Length: 490
Image 1: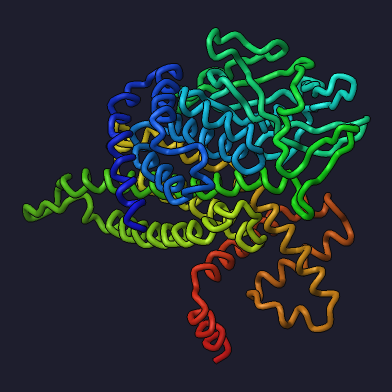
Image 2 (image 1 turned 90 degrees about the vertical axis):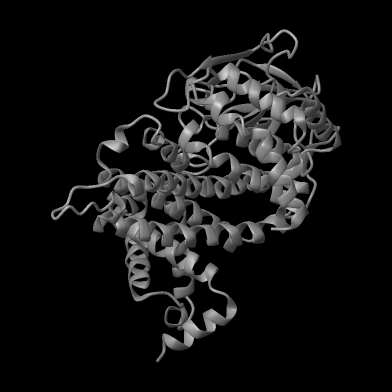
């Protein structure tokens, strides 16, 4: 870490040091959102820092995650919605007027939300958008509309309090759909809190955790938006109403996907930090907890063999996962600064890291809970916040969806390689991975999607192998790869 970022971290820690006291007593979402407004207004982290200072962006998320066992997920989700999904999208694909809006919002402490998820397109559906935004050439405006109840925006974090929203909708021109595009709009009047005409926002209700975060369902009834609402750095509509892709080879949706990638990195690290913090606080308890034993011995709970082994295992695994995340952030940061699209190989490692970090956290925390008795039931122990990891699991790409994609891409790559002479022999993968690719490829040829569903267990077996291989290869440096290559042939 460079010295300027270290100095900034000290300032940021001081700014958020009150959170355990301010937000730990189950505040309502108005109180929590006001605390974020203060943070936004302070300017300690700029809306543009995801592009201008990615090190600060990642560090801020990491620091807030340290409070998760005390606060749950609410404030951290609110924070990443504001700085990654909302501001990050505008920074990535907006133009000068949109960037000025971000500056104005920062100075006023105004909040935004990111309206992507829909009622019939949730975490198990992938990127599906049925909300429409239709260009009206007569008035030079858009009409934003929810065509049927299943297309209502759903579980939109910070949607009940945000003044502005980035709304994902299918862009329609002359009856033709051009796919998902991002539009920035005012959801409510900042001075009166009255809703923009045609916008209907409903609270999703109480949750098992994170009730200091508001989640909204949003329906649009033919809402008129100005032409400037379209985030148009990479795509626009000309004066004749013709769709224009402004940067060759860069689709609008590719740049929007950047926010999901950065989100996956910070969520993966959040899961690791949560797990490490829970283990640390539990160990403080178990180190001081004497247990009865014969001959007046008083070992501590930490010395019980199975718990001692679990602490050691967790230390090793979490260390490796943090090493993975540190390297991933180092390699991703240049792409954020340049505003470019990261290579597919790096995007795949991001997906693998999210899967591995979160599934490891869920597993380790569950095992820890089984070993510490009634302590796991005590309020304030941190175990009451473990649904935090459930939020991490489905946010910005559910583990199952990411595994499905990795497996599909792997089988597709295998099938293409197999058409070349000797490709299977030269494909440097484990024998088990090769066998699964071959069997799934054959099944798809004969049965299509139905066969894929029937082979679901093998699909996830393959995905797990791909995740492990991607992480292993990413963590090995060039010299280590050479050594592994030669040792595997001895």
